[in-house]
Image (cartoon, rainbow, N blue to C red; front, side):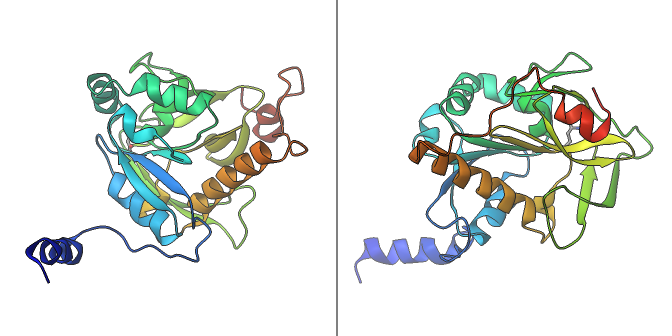
Length: 247
Ligand code: GLN
């Protein structure tokens, strides 16, 4: 064994890289996790458990060839500042416009929103929602709850909320997936999924599986002309409004 390969082997043994499940639902996909701040490592572990390869994204070039991107929880003002410093906001918007599927959790939900009730930080406008930051108030900064999430089988999701936002209002093309105490805490619009809570902090992989399914559908739709992605006509009666009475 040469010194070089010996070193490689040592790197591999010491590496904190999560183990890949080659037969999982994410096998063959490469998913990025915005890694400027927040709990990006936990998302990587979750995605690799499902068989996807992952890549930490800090600069525009890291987005090349990705099938999807997770924007993790953390602190949205800090994340916004770092995104500006790393010049990554416009490339992420271009990634979404080019068909990239995005999953934002907590601060990530705020980051992808059209705006916030508070008016800051500036957001990417990838989903027609307005987020209310730290929405559950000071007394209930962090809590856990069992939530029924539309489309997920096998019972409720044990949701961990940490100084979480909620979706204050949602446009007509937004599908509400879960509410807590009357407020939207999980939603999807076209190729963007958001949760106000943190599935990556639990063992429940179902929301990441849903994200992977969204990627597969997008890719299927792009490959087969017949399977056009289900569009939403803004003139239709609002799905969000119909589902939960929230506008
Ligand atoms: N309260 C944070 C914010 O406003 C989000 C918290 C989280 O991501 N867990 O950015």
